[in-house]
Image 1: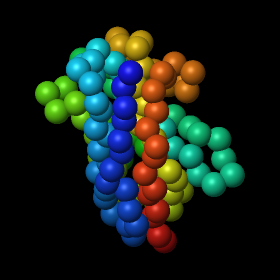
Image 2: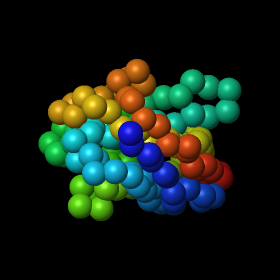
Image 3: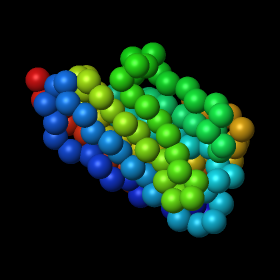
Length: 125
């Protein structure tokens, strides 16, 4: 069992930055691939970024490439999402997720076994 707790969300102006963190419980964090998803009101939850267990494989949705960076610190059981040049369309609840498909940067929701409760990110224009 892996428990995930996101933090770092908030209100920011367009063009600003935020760093999301996701702290995982347990001693198996380093054997899980991790991902970030987001869900805007009235929309489906969508993939944002993913990183494999060792960090070698990383993937982003096209709309955040060059602006967002996913990283992980296995010693701290934490995955991060650095978000720069934020846009109003980035407004959503952001969720982190853990996958036992450890060697992959997984893009699909069904590939993830554990989910956090989410943190709200609001970007004002």
